Length: 403
Image (cartoon, rainbow, N blue to C red):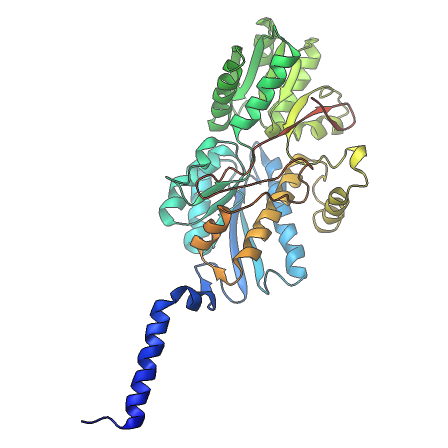
């Protein structure tokens, strides 16, 4: 059958359009909306878990702050017109429970990503599962170096200073402050504690020093009195406490009771021990040193700082349940700002692959409540955003910078 002139012309135009589309797929894709599970025209579903119960239930403030942050975002129109739904579950800081909740978030709740899970043990438990499912595990709140491995685990991105950087900061300070230091360590007998202890040993070795004695505790222990007496009797002149806030507070109390006067260094994970002690009327935290990357909301020198004012206003209006001076709400607020940044950059391309592309391309960015000297930067082969930390000493009323 012969084609009419109109039919031939139509066939030529159709062929030309098809050729053009094949030659320029990127241009075509850029004009389209792209969604993976958990995203739509109206909603972005984000999964999260933390310890709302159990021995470290104070971590629950991270979930409440994250949800409150996006309640405020949604009240202002959401992200690119989409409501952000934070589904935050209780993992009790238990690895089996964390895995159970991650499965629920992915398979039942249908989230786009899992964000901001707190602590090394829970994140270790869900690490392989989420990567196997190709679901982003972003904003991991753990200093374990294992979470920065884009080659083998391309779906995982930490957003907490690595234990290597933190322990190097302490090792430099100890080497300068006490040339004859005998270093005692109290550490949690879990992945977090063991990895931090190993990082400290390595960092001290670079300064010709070693751990004098290290003793561990279990998260089920009621006290750490025996461990502190062990370290005191060893003749240690420096005490490095690698612990959650509850156990850091118990350790500082016991140090004070015994009359021991070591140089005390507390890892950043235990920072919330200080307001715990202050609330109890104790001055056992006076003089303790820690490394930080966030502004201290109770620092008098920062009373007029715009970041601090905005953060305090947020906490008062959107999350009055938690103490604005505690470390965990501050870090959760900062981490929530990272999530907002990622979702805004994603635009209408709300795919899991695009989320990880953005994660690997953060260029010298400073988020609200970062210390002025801190900026974060990532690349496709290095998701570890933090490169430096600042030392602070508690003066009895607030944290102050130290060298």
